[in-house]
Length: 406
Image 1 (tube, rainbow, N blue to C red):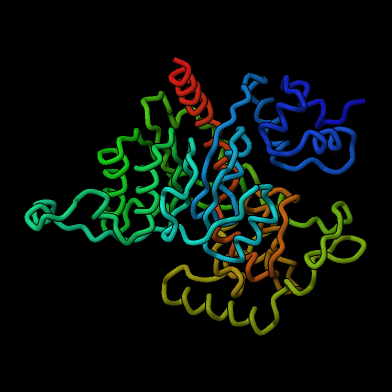
Image 2: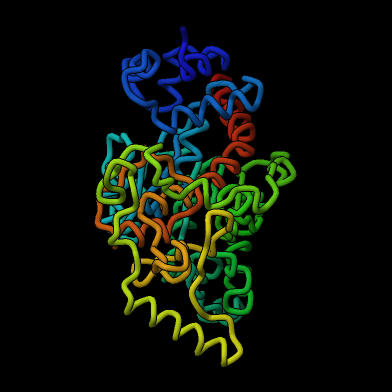
C-alpha cells in the first residue's frame, strides 16, 4: 500500500527523478521516504501539496536563484518549493549561517557580507531574493549633482545603504524576477523618501515592472506580523496580487503551534522533557521577572499607553515575535493558569509560529534561536507569493530558452 508521500507524488504526475530535480534531494532519499524509511522533508511535501492544490497542473520548472540577507532561509523555502535551485547565499551573521547550513543542502557555503562581494563573483541567476535591512538615503538634488559632475540615480542616491547592493546586482545580472521583503514601515520611513527612491530605482533606473503589498502573516500563522513584499519582473507579465488567496485572519490559533504536553508528540530535549513531552521548566518566568513585568505594565497603563506584556492562551493569536524575545519574552507569554507563572515559547514553538516545520533543525543556543526566528519571515507567506510568481517565472524561462534556440 502506498504511503501518503508516494500517493501525492503519483497523483501529481511526477516521477521520482522529477521530484528530485525540483527539491534537490537524491532519488535514493525520495525512494526511502516512499518506503517509510524516515520522515519526508517539508520542502518535498510542500512541492507535492502545492501541485495537488493546483490539480497537478504545475510543470517541473528548474530555475536558479540567489538568497541575499538570507537569515535562516525563510524566503528561500518558498522558492525551493516551486522548483528553484539556490546558487548563492549571503548572510553576515555567523550563527544564522550555522542554522542555514544545517537546513539546506547546497554545494556552496553561506557567504558573508554582501557589501564586500563584487558582482562578478556572484553566479548568474533567474530570480533574486533579498530581505534587506531598511536604511535612510541621503537624497540630494539632481541639478546640484549635475553641476558638480557627479553621478545621479541609484549609483549615488543609494550609495552607503544595503539596498545599493541589491540594485547593483540587479543592474549587472539582470535576473528575470526578484522578490524583496521589508518591514511594513518602509513605506513611511524617512517621510516616504526611502520607499520613493527604492521604487524609482527599480522601475525608472533598472527597468523592472514592480508590484508591492503589505501582507499580514496572520492569514497563515497565529501571529500578527505585517511585512511589505515587493515583486518585480524584467519583462511585462500579467502578475496580480488578486491571485494571492488569503484565509481569514485569525483562522489559525496558537493551539496549533504549542507543545500539547500530553505525550502526543515526541520529546525534544531541551525544549520538552519526560513521558508526556512537557515543556521544560526553564521556560517558566521566575517570580522576580514576572513581578517586574506586571509592575512595568501597571506603570505604563497608569500613564495611558499600552506598553506591557502579551499574555496568551491556546485560543489566541500572538503579537509580533521580535528579535528581542530572548530578553524577557514579554510580547508573547503563554498562560499556565492562575497558580503558575506564565512561560516563554520554546524555540521549537517559535519555529512553528514562523511557519517552519518540525524537521527544521535548530543547532544554536536558545538566545540565538530567539533572535533568528524573531528576525525571520513567516515562511507560508513567501510560499504563497512564490506560487503566484511561479507561472510568470516559468513563462520568462521558456521565452529565454526559445531565444537561445532561435
